Image 1: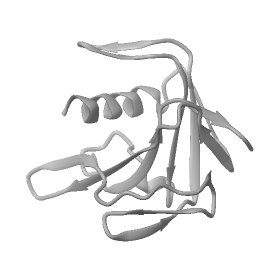
Image 2 (image 1 turned 90 degrees about the horizontal axis):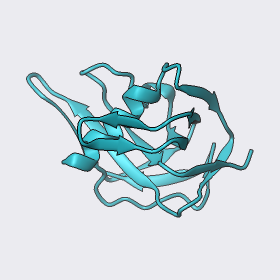
Image 3 (image 1 turned 180 degrees about the vertical axis):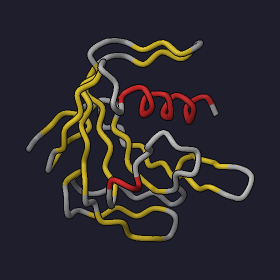
Length: 131
């Protein structure tokens, strides 16, 4: 549960935050080899997020490549890159500065700070831009 909250915090704190500059990329790589697939759903009373089921990562993290998650094939249409300029501390959760990336079918699949968000995306906490 703590990891999902940390991922939500990193997204919320970096999107539109003066501490982070955001841009898009055509291709990135996970510098540490770790790619997390996250899915969010909203319901009548509750919203939930967590790791994807049956996740098969893409060969490359690039626009046009595909990954499998939750029983479907998803084609990457957008990659966002955020340069977190300083560490963020939220309660007992600490997020280290550095390059953070997200990849999804479209921007609407990425968290936007609203409770009713739905989507599936890749989160790369230690990201390097290739193109």
